Length: 298
Image 1 (cartoon, one colour):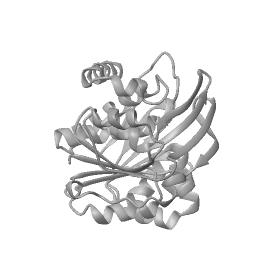
Image 2 (cartoon, rainbow, N blue to C red):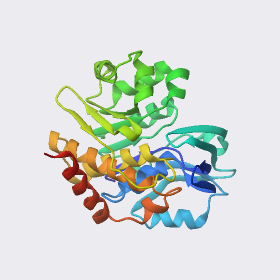
Image 3 (cartoon, one colour):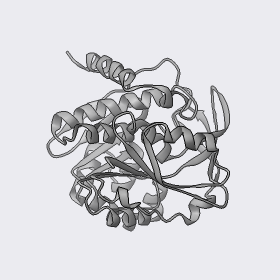
Image 4 (cartoon, rainbow, N blue to C red):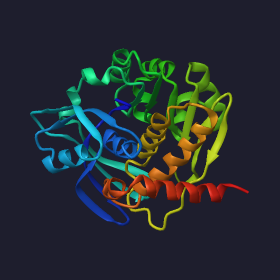
């Protein structure tokens, strides 16, 4: 397996200024795997209930996504309800963990030798458990959120010490490090052990920060932002999918991965759920990446 993604699979109820979508399929593993699968074979580790639509299960399977790590158990799938009054800020109305509450991720045998692992936004203890299973992984990346930063900071620090790449947004990295400047905050994170920090700045782009690379990518401008749910996961999925595909981890590859992540997110936000992200091809992504390169070059 070239890339393994561990995270949530959810059924969402999302409302934005462009409308509302009930029974919208979401979750960190869903968005990340659909983006990554444009580049490489991808495996999901997660859990769903018996209410999860069979047609969506088959759809994911048809997209070069291996589902042998996706458990189906008795009960309801994880549910989230959110409203975006401001398109950049999600207000959570309701969260029902359901089967996700007792989820214990286990890597199938065919996942154990994966060289690239992405730990989506789940409890840090679960992230640590997965890291211990993936002993052959050369690239481990993780995402997190303010809930874990506030609630389980020690465990989260333990995770960060064991990963190569941390994906985190601007407010979260400031909260994690108690630094007001994102670059000073990134320096603090690097002291913990990661080689790279990717700071997501929403409509203001993203920053790749390390001792050797400091690289900023603006957003790819789209006409209508319909639903930003899953944009960060799509970014991370495409970033790591690209790295897994080319098999390199040098400066040029990482810069290109930032571009591919940005473009994948741009497709994701143009529709509810994965309507748009699911139907695009790698050629569509390449086209926007070339346009983005033209935008940022002299």
